[in-house]
Amino acid sequence: MKLSNKVAFVTGAGQGMGRAIVKGFAEAGALVVAADINLEAAQQTIAGLGEDTLALVCNVADSASVAAAMAAVEARFGRVDILVNNAGVGSVDAFVETPDENWQRVIGVNLTGVFLCSREAVRLMHKTGTKGTVINISSTSAVTGEGPSHYCAAKAGVMGLTRSMARELAAGGIRVNTIVPGPTNTPMMAGIPDDWMQSMLKGIPLGRMGETDEIAKVAVFLASEDAGFITGQNLAVNGGMAFI
Image: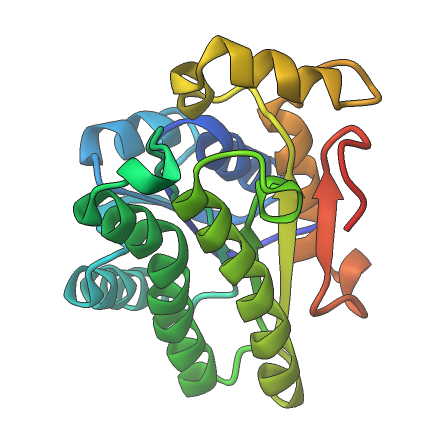
């Protein structure tokens, strides 16, 4: 199997794309860690996936919580080979009406969380000499500007962070890439106003939203040796909605 015995840490694993990625990794042979701010949801994700799994509470926007989660992974498995920064939040705010706390929360989870989790994972990779891979989840909104300003800004920041990390970490054999989904059938999309949703769907040449398993398959590819010469890339999975 493509990810046999690789240790994969997935954030935001309690639902949506995170849950699909965990299951896709497990099917590919990985030892999976499902991290989520909701422990019960993370436990539900790994249910039935076997003993080589771990569910953890992790608030990706809090450095102490991230450090504790990664320490638990080291204690259980001794290393981490794959990190997927999937945890994300949204908030439907018009630009001039965006409260400070909503801006900080969206940036904190969607961008700062990627930094904090990546920093801890890479520290462990360096400690163990692991030539691992980091996969960040951005959004086509980062390119099109369709969506709330804080969300678009955070997801654009993820793409820039990916490029910087890829260049700096390549010498140690660590690859860093981003998946850039378009509208995808996830619980987060349930909160999108209908007029926004219809507008987005009209802009997708393939005429539909993506499915979580389609994102998971791309994550498995990027984490595998099939993508061994791919780093620093932002890979769009958006039905042709935008070209990255």
